[in-house]
Length: 61
Image (cartoon, rainbow, N blue to C red; front, side):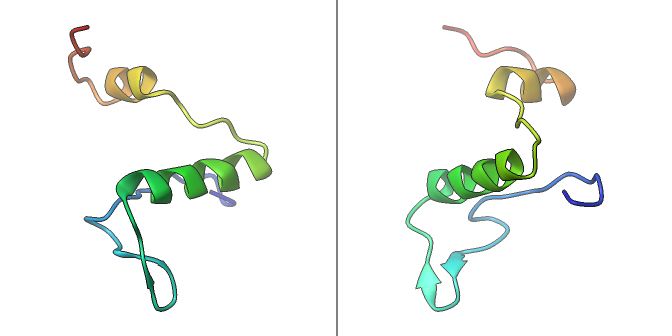
C-alpha cells in the first residue's frame, strides 16, 4: 500500500493475525488492513465498489 499497490487479505492467504496467534476470522484480517489503509490516508473500497472493479455482478438484495 505504501508504494501504491493493492493488498490481498483473508484466511486463504494467511491464517495468522500476528506471530503465534491464529486469526479468528476473515473479518478480523479485513478490519485490520482497512484500519492500516485509513492510517495511510487511503479509503478502502466498499464491497459493491470491489465487485464493480472486478467485473462481478452485484449481489441481489
